Image 1 (cartoon, one colour):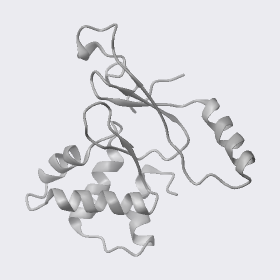
Image 2 (cartoon, rainbow, N blue to C red):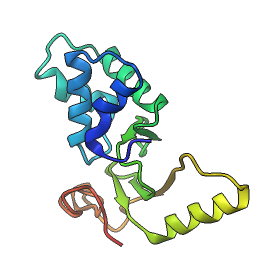
Image 3 (cartoon, helix red, strand yellow):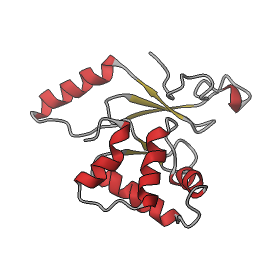
Image 4 (cartoon, rainbow, N blue to C red):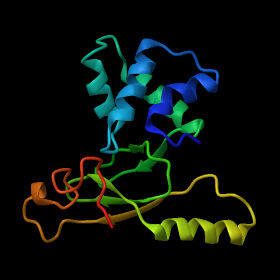
Length: 160
């Protein structure tokens, strides 16, 4: 499991994958994002530099990163689009069904839960995912949503 954002290219190389300029650019773009991007948002970001990039290449690269455990898939945030997670350290994801943003919540409770699960099954937990879904019911304007990056810290986290 890759613990550092900067290790995506290295993880692919170690797994025996050939690094193309497009694949490298996708990994670099993904490692600089804190907003739980979608394949399409990564495609739009990298296509600005590599006009020949196909959306299929982005999906294939993300699928490869998922298979080697370098990233995780979070599913939808109410927008019917799969979001991806680079932070593989234990944490809680908070998904807003109003503005469709996902933030990380670092919590000691998640580490305690992981330890409890490991003890119960008598084996090491390889990966896990905890996602809480909410709506900005108190906000009439989605831009006022607490999950908005302007409301969270620069790394897309809501601190406990």
